[in-house]
Amino acid sequence: MAWPDYNDLTDAQASSAFQSAASANSLKIANLSALGQLQLACANLLLGDAPVGDIPAGEIAAGTFGSSSSTPTGNYGFPNVLFSTTAITTPSALAATAFNAFASAASGGVVMGFGTTHDVALKNRAGTTVFGVVANSTQIDLVAAAAGVRGGATSTTFYRSDGSTIVLQYDSSGRIGIGTAAATRYGIDFALAQTATSGRAWSFVLEGGLTAAANSDTLRGLYIGQSVTPGAFTALQYTALEIAAFSTAAYTSPGNPVGIGIGVITGTGASVATAIQIAPPTGASTNYLIAHTTAATFNVTAAGLLTSASNSVWKGGTAVPATAGAVAAGAPITLYSGGITIEVTSDAPTHTRPKGSLCINTGGGSGSTRMYINTDGAGTWTNFTTAG
Image (cartoon, rainbow, N blue to C red; front, side, top):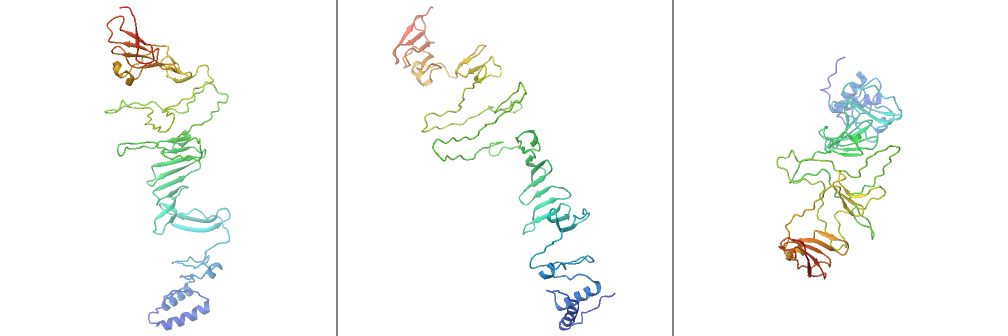
């Protein structure tokens, strides 16, 4: 059937014809010119298509938004709510660019789609995709925020927007991997590679502030209070904090490696400031405050005694001072709470030390000038007579 030519109709004639057609067929079409309305009305009558344009809310609610025998085309506007009250079974998988929206008894309001990058996407007002269901997958992208999250049945992974760099992953057991996909290896696994900027690179920084709320509050920057359940297993090894071995052998020009570095602690106003404080262990047959990996080499017992099954050498980093500088240099050995010292000077001692302190004079040339004992707790020293 040929399409009639209405170009010679005036607006008034077109409007009158449309009024008659609309009244006879209960057509509801708005926001078109009179000529356009007539042409559209004729198309609907001749071809049986659904009306195109703004559809009143009452007509949508009545369920006349298209029909099973026609596929609506064009843009549809509605002033209120578009809704469905009858649940349907999820349609078959889409095989080409398409969009489905329907009510599901189990899932509620459902949207299905087919696309090359995302099957379904939410865009912001600028038309930028913010949230997208990755095409043909169960993963989702958070795109506009320059980050992404993709979840699976056993783990959820957060990516950068490039889709390949892992930021964080956690699995169904609650284990967390940061910078790695191997979250299942440890409770928390930090594996982010860092490149130095402004002269430094750090893998982990703890900078959260601690604020006291009452007198005698205990504030800890890092607390390890882990419990261990050995069960029936034997010969177990447990280390609360371990620093793995490392080497600077491959460095072109290595600096000075440090296993643990502690910055200056300023204890202004405090009674005691301590860089490292160790509580003595108890319960074992032998308890050490500090132990060498080779037990016979060097140990400090829980009582503070230095023990070694081999020869031990204590070596200072400065030259033997003269008596004038001995107090500033400090005595290398101090005994008991009274502060009795054993030290070495390059001349006969005259400096103040606790009574009973011993001093060896490396400059002594006779049996009466090589060793001295302090007799008054001040600067008086009496010589020992030694052989030779």
